[in-house]
Length: 438
Image 1 (cartoon, rainbow, N blue to C red):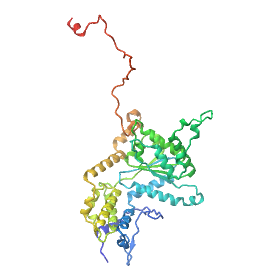
Image 2: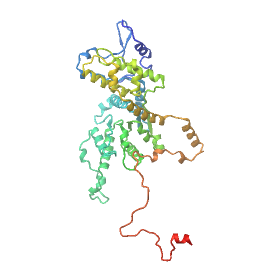
Image 3: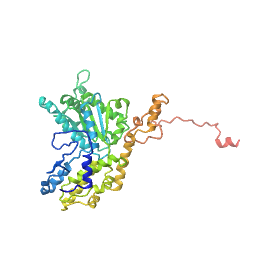
């Protein structure tokens, strides 16, 4: 019987993160809280591996297997479970937020939540063929710097399989009080918005999920972020559909816009693995080891022997780590490699400058969520009425995504041919120099 390495022994002792939660999703390609562990002839545990027959498959099949392989690591499962609970038990919370650093795995949760909704909605779908279990789309980054609501509504109607999208008519807008037609009064955005609200009410999805929702904050004018958020809240209210916004820490500018929004929204923080947390580093090493055991290569690479390097170049984000490993695997398989060394991974690693940029953005978002003594004192002083509320108002109320430079002067140009008001000198006036001489 093959002796287990120190990494394998540590993995078995941890029993894949030593979590007590149990979550089973019976859908192809889904993940469980703990991976399936095979048993050998003597009944002892073996580390789960990729199918042996995969080594004889084409390179594309081997790469696709690894790209579709998902690890149910603890921080992902914590965020996933919390978001699922919020989706199916929204109460009066019409807006849900899921935010975290770039590359942490938010899109993975986005895909898995859709699978769970379908599974739980099967009885309702069988009873009513007109129901759509969910509506989900990605907010597209604007071309001109300002978020395009018209494009968003069209994409959402396409996602809902609506018909005649380009031929929507808002009869309330084109008919005036006397009942006469007024085609100029029709607003395309208003027409599409009413179509979206109506479709959501009739299709009755459990939730509307918007990935990359930070793109909805893009603005070139002086509009406040509150206006964008008000549009989202109104859409949720008029359509009777909870909305989940998924994105980076930029969404934090949305969450604290008003007390009403804070009361009617739920936040889920999908955090990265932190180096200063020993438990986090154990979980990260276990996830790295699972990737090592499931890379379809003839000779298994040594990843956990270089845990610090892999952590450094992915800043603790499993999504970034997996993309990096998948790219290295694909490129080296195309070159006929049988195994991978640490030098192969260094070739396709993110640069130090890129990692510095990523960790700075992540730390800025994490620091906004950290509760410190200063914040506690501010809360206490406000509760005790020791300070004026406007002294601690949220800066986000006045914040816009892109600031325009303010004009220095407030003077306005007059009409052509009209003199500006000023004092005219008289004949008897004394010049300043002559007055000083006297």
